[in-house]
Amino acid sequence: MIADNIKAIQEQLGDAKLVVVSKYRTISELKEVYDCGIRDMGENRVQHLMDRYEALPKDIRWHMIGHLQTNKVKYIAPFIALIHSVDSVKLLNEINRQAAINQRTIPLLLQMHISDEDTKSGLDAKGLEEIIQLAVYGKNIWPNVEIQGLMGMASLTENSEKVQNEFRRLKNVFEQIKRDHNQNLPHFNILSMGMSSDYRVAILEGSNLVRIGSAIFSTN
Ligand SMILES: *Cc1c(COP(=O)(O)O)cnc(C)c1O
Image (cartoon, rainbow, N blue to C red; front, side, top):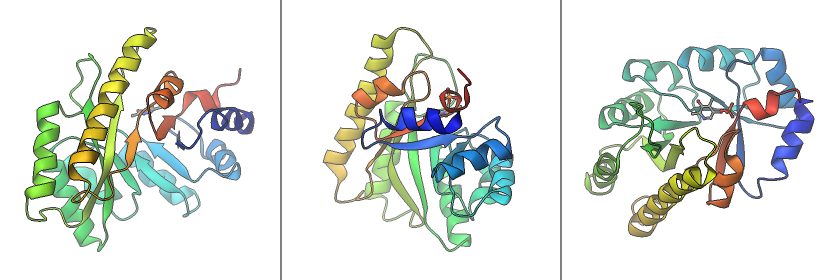
């Protein structure tokens, strides 16, 4: 069942990469996902990342996709493959600090607020610009992080035109940053957008990484 779902989704992704969102799932379900060849898995809670990292094979690349508190960065810094949800200078400073302590570079995405939902997570255009300016002109202030792109979540709505417009806006911001700063941000290549309900729209709008959970584990 899981294998069939993964296969059906992969056939629609083209070159986009699939991160299987493992939240709420059992270790045995995740082993099944692993046996399908999936090596990228995502979680939105630090504690769950730590538990699963311990319990599952070490060649899985773990993605942090949920809101990350500064004081919890230290727990995932040794092993995290990509943090999708960076939305403040303070958090960037701490990721850089913990990466240095672990003698590594931590790849991350900047999360932009694109929906009309009133959540606290995600940068607005101004906050995003501020971080890009610091990264580009700030005299290498974050030597142990690699800003690899953007992440965004569209509104939860049946209105696919609205979802499409939100993704399109994120894609435009992504392209503009790439164009303006490709010298200074050579690794800025990932556009993380699309989940179970909207990944088809996201792919059409230029996503190259989707984060999918429920569509893989549903039984119908
Ligand atoms: C849960 C979650 C997903 C996956 O959602 P599904 O609807 O289960 O595919 C993707 N991204 C984030 C940030 C999430 O929290």
